[in-house]
Structures are given as structure tokens and as C-alpha cells.
Length: 179
Ligand SMILES: CC(C)(COP(=O)(O)OP(=O)(O)OC[C@H]1O[C@@H](n2cnc3c(N)ncnc32)[C@H](O)[C@@H]1OP(=O)(O)O)[C@@H](O)C(=O)NCCC(=O)NCCS
Image (cartoon, rainbow, N blue to C red):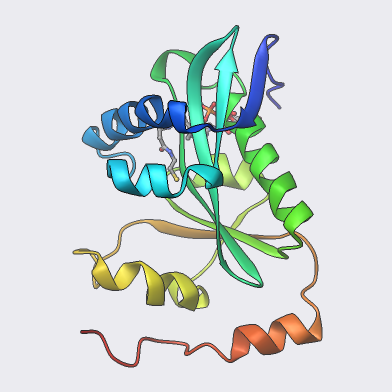
């Protein structure tokens, strides 16, 4: 198992990090390995993000977005190509999972092309339809809605309470109407 490299700091993002986040995510998105983010979506969601600095240099970012009382999504996790595979991604994901625990969120999921990375972090592959919140909120606007090639992966941080299960089950399991 990779351990975090010396000199690595994971911290909450600041608005001044938005440019670095956008450049990294959109550079990797051009290589078709992740989805792009608009400037507005990064800035509006800056409090979702952590950034990774190695010896003071920006090398990565990742976000945790709460979608419902029982679920949060890890999004836009990205490591600069010249420092991949040395533990930066795992350190950011662990930090995001710690934030989810502090928030009391029992379940974290991701839509990804890097199944193995998330498996190493304790996620398991699930059917897309097991994530109705995601389908309902984001996927309805995606051109790949009927032909999504991303893998849905989920990690249970703790058993949801009966109340949380009830809250989750009040959501529609599929979109009722897409305008
Ligand atoms: C995927 C990504 C975030 C992983 O970050 P990283 O810093 O390279 O990964 P780490 O070094 O922390 O790896 C953690 C574990 O996952 C494994 N892993 C990482 N990337 C992997 C990959 N692409 N394929 C297979 N295994 C991978 C590592 O081997 C490591 O396993 P180990 O603990 O047994 O040694 C990074 O490679 C990246 O930015 N990729 C491009 C963008 C992307 O695909 N983002 C995901 C969007 S959901």
C-alpha cells in the first residue's frame, strides 16, 4: 500500500485555488479520463474541495459534495500527472472520507473510470440505479444519460440509521419527469 510522500499537505481549498483546480481538472478532462468543470461550478463549490500541496506546490484536488442526508459524492479527484501513483490521490480521498464522517454522512460514492483506485480505498462497484440521487440530480443533464460508461462505486462508512433509511427511501427511485 502506498504511503503519503513526505512534504505532502492536504488542506481545504481557498478561492485563490480555483484557477489551479480548473487547469488541472480540465487538462485531465481533455484526455477523456474525467469530466470537465466550469469556472462557475468550481468557484460555487469551492468549499467542497481539498487541495494537495507537495513541498508547497499545488499537485492535486478533490471534492466531497453532499447530495442527501445519507450520501455524499467524491468528485473531481485529480493528481498532477508527474506525481501520480505516489499516494497523493489516496491522501486526498482519505481526507474527503474523514470530512464525510465528521458531517455524519453514512455513505460515499463516486462515478469513475479508475475502478482499481477506488477499490483500493474500500469502494465496491454498484449498479447505477442504486444511486438515485445522482441519477436524479446530475445525470439527467448529461448527454451520456442513456449510455453512461462511468463505473458507480460506493463505500459504506457506517450503517445508516432507520431514520436515514426512511429519508433516503422517500426519494423517487427514478426520474418522474425530465424537462
Ligand atoms: C486516479 C488518481 C486520482 C489516483 O491518484 P494517485 O495519486 O495517482 O493514486 P495513489 O498513488 O494514491 O494510489 C492509491 C492506490 O490506487 C492504485 N491506483 C491509483 N491509480 C490507479 C490506476 N489508474 N489504475 C489502477 N490502480 C491505481 C495505486 O496503485 C495505489 O494502490 P496501492 O495502495 O496498493 O499502492 C490519479 O491517478 C488521477 O488524477 N488520474 C486522472 C484523473 C482521474 O481519473 N480521476 C478520477 C475521477 S473519478
